[in-house]
Every structure is written in structure tokens, then in C-alpha cells.
Image 1 (cartoon, rainbow, N blue to C red):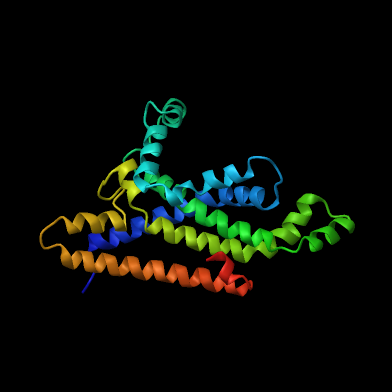
Image 2: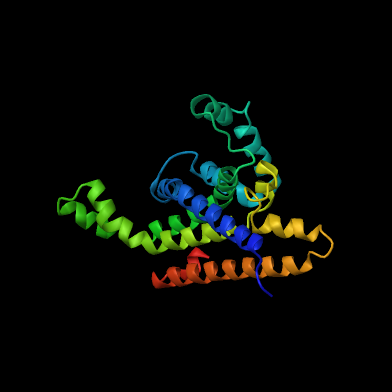
Length: 230
């Protein structure tokens, strides 16, 4: 079985959307993970619940909420239109937003556990030696939590690759723009004689996801906390 040009285009589009989604979610995920790992405040449990809502909500509901927010009359969509004259509806950028939202909880969890695993005594020693909070973070906390961050990035990328429900609800199925691997597989299933295309696309989807999961597990085990991340 050989891939057709259009199928390779679908794979490349999926990789682009997954990569952009993961990179866009990373700073937000790290900030939220830091707050959950080190913060002491009322409402922490509620914040944790809100962050993980995409894991338990039907993806269609998440996509619908994104549609409400980014529609031309929505709070974010109206702002984007007024200030930049752009819309993310029916575009690959919208698909990346949906994928980032769905990947965020997994990334936060992996990064949070990694931050919690950093020995705070090392940070205290660095402070007693005169290092400020910023320097302690960049020279102690960030390097020690890096394996968990990398594992979270790979998990987020894998989740973004497999995103379907929120994406198709939010930005629909536009060939060459929002038709990622899961959407293309679903579309091929609706076409008589599309089984061969489904097999090829599904095989590529399984291979990419498996590679990402194995890489994530390897990165986690390098830090001695593989069981906690996954």
C-alpha cells in the first residue's frame, strides 16, 4: 500500500496542527502546573477541576464552547476581528486551538508532577548561596523538571494528533485546512470504497501515536518517574 499525495498532505497538516497546538499550550501548561504544584490558595481544587474539564466533557461540548467564544459575535472572535481583521473559524489555526485545549490537561498533569518531584531543599540551598528566585528557577527548578516537561509536550502532541470531536464542531471539515487525520478517516469511512484509504491513514495515525507515547514514557523513565507521568 502506498500513500497518495493527498494523504501525505493530510499527514503533514496533522503534524503542523499538532506541533503548533503543543507549542502554543506549553507556556500556559507550565504556568498552570507551577501554580498547582507550588501555590497555596483557596480555590485551588476548583482551578484544578476547570483545567481538567476537557478530559471529562464530551469533546463536542468543548468544541461548541470554543465556537461560542471565537464566533464573530463571541468575546474573543469579535476582538480578533476588530483588532486584527482575522477569524480562526474554518481555518487550521482554529483546529490548532481546539487541539491545544484538548491537550492542555495532559500537559499540565505531566509538568505538575515533574515540578513536584524537584527537591525543594536544592532550591533552598541555592537561595542561601545568594541566588534570587528567577535564578533558582532557571538554574535548578527548570532543568530538574525538564524531563517531565518534555514528556508532557510529547503527550500533548499525541493528544493533538488524535483530536476529532472538538475540532469538527469548532472548525468543521475543510479539506486542506482543518481535515486532520481523524477527520479524514471519518470522511473516508462515509465514502463507498474508501476502505483502503482508511487503512493507510489509520495505520499512520497509530504509528505516530505509538511513537509519541513510547517517547513520552522513555523521557519520563529517564527522570525516574515514568509511572507518575502516565
